Image 1: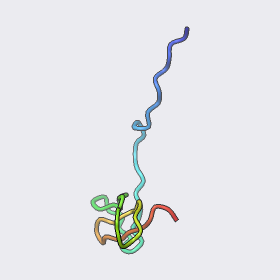
Image 2: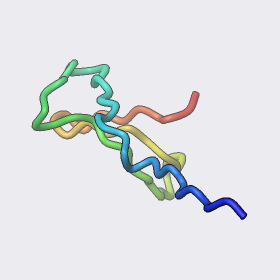
Image 3: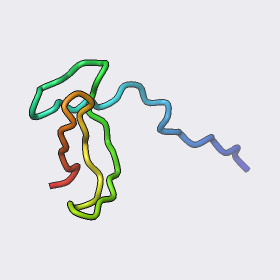
Image 4: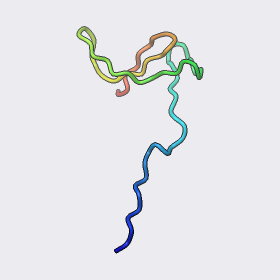
Length: 62
């Protein structure tokens, strides 16, 4: 019987995706847009990209 090879794990990948803010066009390393899950009562809930400098929200879908 042949020996089993270990699975390739996705954590070996280097680098990441940095999204530009549509309102302030911030591409700084200090304040990139990050993905946040929002649960709200007055507005639609879901996953959003949020800018660290100007608090702009962009939905991840659509």
